[in-house]
Length: 302
Image 1: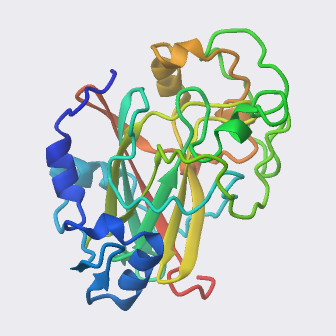
Image 2 (image 1 turned 90 degrees about the vertical axis):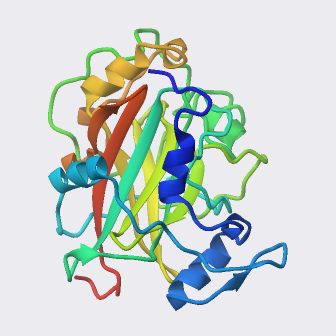
């Protein structure tokens, strides 16, 4: 299920697009504009635009999000060591990364009102099929410390071997040197920005991204990072994960199959929780995944 170069992306981007020119605002300008709820902003090129998200939600997406519906406050997790403001306001975050096409749909809800939260900004970022993060390729490859991202050389074995048994442990640092404890924002060490992007929630509280199925690295299960901003506040930092049967299916094919020695699965990951699992269905030559985030928009602890 590899993505083609332009597989219906025109339609998907149009459903999820910001109006022309908004991509040059940058995240800081976008947050300021959404925090005002209305009104134009000036882009880096001097153009005046009004950030907007599409008002429509497709039927297939609405149905999938309905299955994932919850108004329980979403638990926060670490942002990990590779977060920074990539300044990329876009729905298609793949750039040149190969892999199985994945649509990621996120509905943001207010935990108190149990209703959609419009004009929130959602960022996502994740590693590629080789386990590398843009802006931090040397760090995430282990090149700066002489090993793999999790420390040391990966053991041999099939890329999607049998997951170990047992219940998922509690939170904490990832094993094997792959710690993802509290971390400051990263200062990028290269100019790559693939698999990073931000979007504005529409009137249904929904954003959608087109990406590739994330890869893996030592010490962590397969995951995508997400951060929700309301105005200038980071109201949620969390992670999204996938059923191991799907991970194994995807990882059996190129380009993932070249990356062997996976050592951490959902049930021995130090951050995994069942509430982080995305609802996933097949979608043409890839997959559609969906999840609800319930956030404390006014930061009053409820």
